Length: 65
Image 1 (cartoon, rainbow, N blue to C red):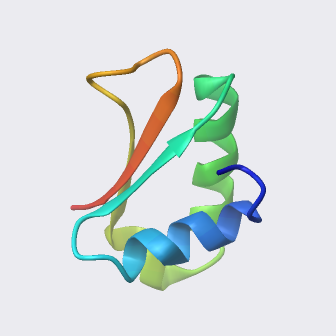
Image 2 (image 1 turned 135 degrees about the horizontal axis):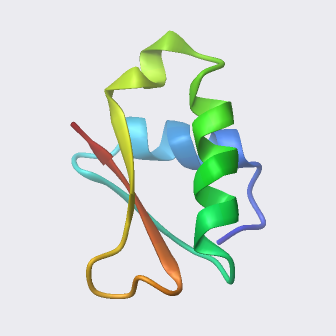
């Protein structure tokens, strides 16, 4: 799922009913990059970027607050 630009994952989460799950090999690095992208658009401030509770080694959840 990382083949999309990072900002696209955020907009996809914004336009979904609950959010999206993004798979990765480096959770903390992806999380940091998503925070940077989220700051670029105030409309994205309603999104929360969390490490998955079920797959904390490989997934980020981007959910609506």
